[in-house]
Amino acid sequence: MQQTGWHDTIVALATPQGVGALAIIRLSGEQAIAIADKMFYGKNLTEQPSHTLHVGTIRDGETIIDEVVVGLFKAPRSFTKEDIVEITCHGSMYIVKQIVMLAVHHGARLAKPGEFTQRAFLNGKFDLAQAEAIADLIHADSEAARKTAMYQMRGGFSREIKALRDELVHFASLIELELDFSEEDVEFASRQQLRKLVDNINQKITGLIDSFELGNVIKNGLPTVIAGKPNAGKSTLLNALLREERAIVSEIAGTTRDVIEDEMTLGGITFRFIDTAGLRETSDTIEAIGVEKTKQKLAEAGLILFMFDLSTEPIEAIRSEIVRLERQPTPYLAIGNKADLCDKDHITAFEELPNSIAMSALDEKDLQQLEEAILQKVNIEAFNTGSTVVTNLRHEQALVHARQALNQVVAGIEQGISNDLLALDIRQALHHLGEITGEITTDDLLANIFSKFCIGK
Figure 1 (cartoon, one colour):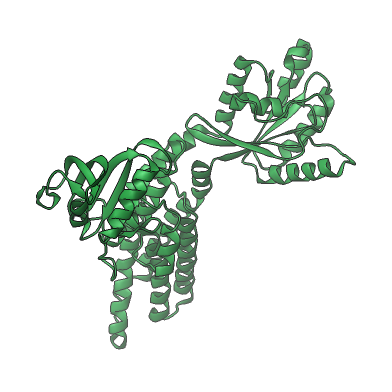
Figure 2 (figure 1 turned 30 degrees about the horizontal axis):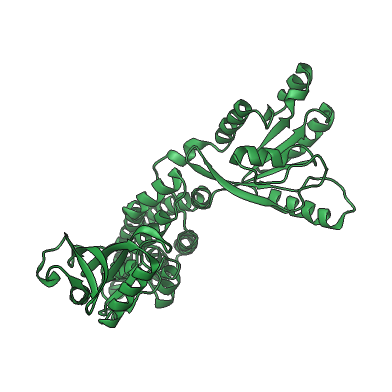
């Protein structure tokens, strides 16, 4: 599945930019080993077997640039299914630049973003969904994100899409066969069986589409808004959760005037905690803007931590606010802060309210109980099902379009439309499913996907 113009050899730094103990420079292509051999002194690399390491020096003429270890991976037993050379050198960016430019001088060219992975896809190493999962795995910042990306990279999601396509292809071929025998009025594909098949596939596709909400949280983190009146302790709670002084804490009401965001992982899930301006009527123009931003963030939240100052707010006022929280669709926890300053009756009355937890944001034990309550609220078990979860917006959109095409098939069966129109809708569904795995691609699509990868990946 190679593409014209992909026979040149590319080079790039495969490890992160910046000074480190070691750096790895990767070459891939037909001349990778020959180019490396022109720079390497120690052994003749062109005579060495695949999957071997060799110690020597990289030289530019008589000048020794660095002592290195060179790894050889010959086609097709490599990541790109081309010859690959990986040069491990010391982590000086000056040394890295010298080696890369020397490789270019000997015939390589600088790799584009994601070009190594793109070559692996074009050479049939894996499909497009698996290639995208590699990028997700690189950027995974939680256990849930790692597990999901690993499952997709190993082909779990692709196998499900292939199974759906195979079922449709079978019926599509029968309908196409009927078109060839249209004058004999022969039916190879039962419309009743086709309807049953389409309903079954639609059910599976709908399940995948519905999983995208969870997948988006796994990939990007759960937006968790900390809201409440001024001086309820929102910034104190943010600092306590993050274990650092991230937000300014003051007794002066209205200190927080803009949203402050930071991330942390709880139970293998990434949470994006968002500290907001206190909710109140204000004549201060800047603070009023902050209040409007708070309302916007509340509308976008996946979880709301609504804080009350138990030392000053009466139960009836808190109860009316919780009634309002109960009416909105977003999951919430009502947090009664400064419980250490209250009597037991006040705390007991608060804890009888729905989804409530009394605590002190300065108490480590209370903080641990809050973290446990947060995990229970987001249903942590949903993140550990081991089933396929759609995390990529491109995949979700392709599934939506496939379902729309299949709904057209159902409508066509019910209306008794002709076979050629029925076949057209089935082919459209197959097209959209094929977009996910890369069986249907365009140059623009590939350029857009791989341009988001790292240079050396």
